[in-house]
Length: 187
Image (cartoon, rainbow, N blue to C red; front, side):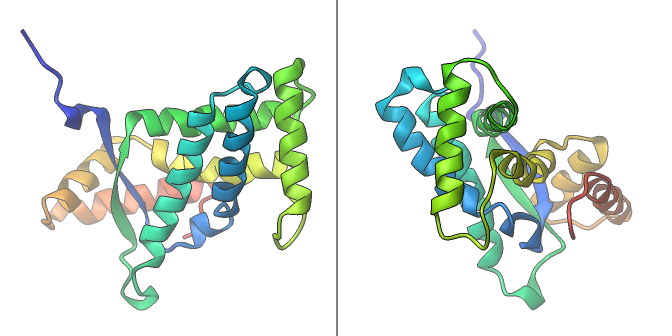
């Protein structure tokens, strides 16, 4: 009989060490937490379970907190981050729901989510009003970075996890940086 290792349920990822790439999406941690509370009390009105919304918000907050804890002058250009598979799925599902809420999605679920997001985007203390479409656009780079899985990412993750620097490590990291730039992630 084979058992699955809990480590198989975690995805080692590399995220940019400069917190600027996620700071513009940090407000989503609060927005998704409040939306999760509404979905908890009226689950039939929302397209996602409250837990998915809450998880996505917590992941954003956790990544940002981990990056801002390091001093800016000592921050590494790339940081190893372990993301549970279910957390990645929650982020992807929330992104899809935000896109649906930003459009003219049919159904009561898209309408309830859109109404909640519009209310939160207008009433919370952010630099400016955020629409559901802007919220989706702000979440896209976060999901793109943590979902990125390429041979270069895997090689760099292995070297960072083992705390070793080989000839191919710099090449792998350069490829990862290029992939981030291609995704539109500010470095």
